[in-house]
Image (cartoon, rainbow, N blue to C red; front, side, top):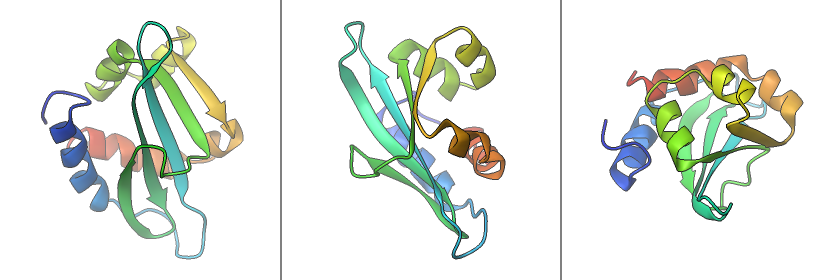
Length: 122
């Protein structure tokens, strides 16, 4: 994959997400947002990954994705995660903040596995 978080990387991730189908038609898809911040907390990058409902996965740029849950992290942390760093370690270190419906995120094991596969290149 290209440089993590770059436009090319997001395009490649979108292609890989499109190959991921999770869940059944008629069930709600997970709308997981990512907001990458600068040192002052300003937003550098924002996109939403949509997975589930038996449909191909998608990456929606900007605020258009209307995420249920948002992971907020620095560019450095986001690059580590994009490179395969375990999110559990980043969460326990306080490097990733969660905004929104945390229970929805906890229940989304299949969707998160599909995201991990897409990030890993599968």
